[in-house]
Image (tube, rainbow, N blue to C red; front, top):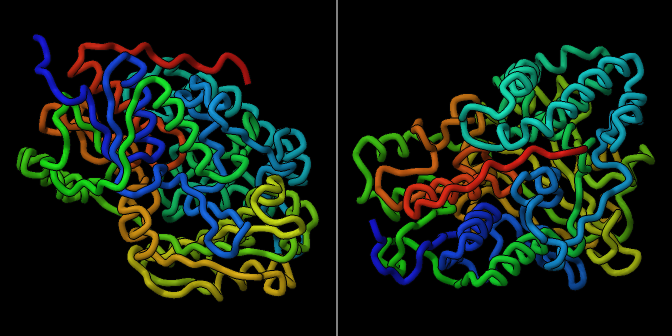
Length: 488
């Protein structure tokens, strides 16, 4: 059946990495696609700005991007031709301990394993297995629940990935190896006793060994700018400064894809949905929030451990048990005195981020959803714990509590930067249990945000799979399956 004439074939609401990925895939098929962004600047979680002092470029949300290079879709795009350059720190990630030692994530599995003493063999065996499997299963893990291309490989990964991080950590004896697992698993923003938190740790470790943990030169906004430049080079159109609250604001289109979470989708298009679908969206669960700080620094962060001074990313939390307990407290609505802190020091590898001789720092800790408690002193105390003299290097700071984080990006409900809890109950069935999580009960309306599989992270796969579904259902265009990585 021929489609009715519309202003556009497809409209994408929201210009985060998922919205832009969806727009690119549809524009690649020769359709006319419009992206509408509520803010004056595109990017969603991919924006950078001088938040503290002139000359200091800070990443407002995402900072380090292991999943961007691991993304099966982004790998197919010529983003380097549109100004995107990734920089690799000498140490991908570091985890300092109170005794002055540190667990390090290095490109080499052997070198990483060599730093965890008695756990050298256990770590090497585990990560050699996972990195061997990853190129066969990346599109399956970073996608909706479906029959995998390599079922045996996915099953082998699942045996390691589905248990809680507490089980994964029990494979190791040394404090440093266990801490390394805890710091990685805490990216899940949920208790480490939850099922599938091991998956987060293993994916991030594998990404580090295969592709590193890259930092975009000039700021995370460069990723969004490259995606947008490629999209417009194909003929796509972007309009900013139009915050959508009603379907009536949109030009006519055969398909509309929303890079928003269930809360906004209900407000914008709820009247179009069945009562059952609306009920399911209303039951969607949001998770813990974040409290974030950016610093303009007079000198590099003076970590006691010299290897930490070369790392792009630092996990602050000492032992696995300390991280486990602090995340559990936050899940229960409390604010721990020693929270897990995720810290990035982009200027260690990117000299465009600060004036000569100066540096930037970026950090957040998890807090209860909607918390407005000022965590500045607590976060800075955690940094000082592993880098005595840190406070003396601070020239200026910029802070954001959960309300300010949500004001910056309405998808971050209550400060939840993952678009909803990424636990086993919402891992593959987010936002609702349907044959396709990207479809709604209204024909032609789709959701493409991190509230769909595979969830949070800068990888664009939520947008890719949503657009792929819309292309098939509305335009009768079938997209070939993404091919596994041919090498590592």
